[in-house]
Image (cartoon, rainbow, N blue to C red):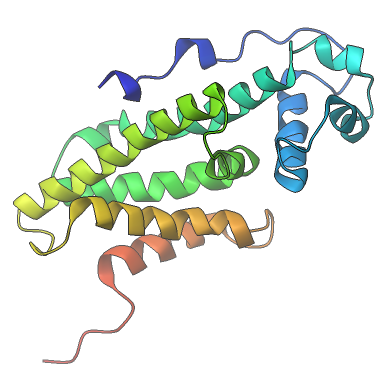
Length: 209
C-alpha cells in the first residue's frame, strides 16, 4: 500500500545552524505545542516568534512557512505510526499477536511524540496539507482493521465484531491519552502494558472454575 510508505519528503533534512538551542527539531517541538495550545489557524508567525524567543527571520532560517511547519510536524507523528506497521512483529506471526504489537507500539509512539500526535489528532482537513495527513492516517487505520479481520478469521477474535469499528474503538482509547497524559507523571511502560491488557484481556477477572 503506497500510503503506508514513509514519505521521503517528510524526513527532516540535516539540521542547519542557527541561534544556539534552536535547531529545526527544537523549533518543530515548540511550534507543535503552540499550535495545540492556540489552534493552528489562530497561531501566527509572530506567536511562534514569541513562543520561541527568536525573531521571525530566525524561524525562516529553518522553514519557509507556517504551512511547512505543519507538514513537518504531522509527518513526524505519521512516520512514527507507519514505522510501527513495518516492524517484523507487525508483519509476522498470528494476527492477534501482530495487532497486540501494533497497539502497544502505537501507545509508545504517542508518548514519545506527544505534541506531534496531539496535533495530528486535531487536524480537520481544512487544507491540502491536512487532507494529505489524514489520508495517511486512514491508511494506518485500514492496516489495523486488516489485522482485526485476520485475527477474526484465525478464530482469535469474536466473529460478530466489525473489524473497522474495533480498530476505531481501540485507537479511540489510545488517542484519548493525548488529552490527559502529562510527560513525567507516570511509568510509560506501565501505561502501555495496562492499555494492552485492558484491550485484549478485559477489565474483570475470570470466574473461578
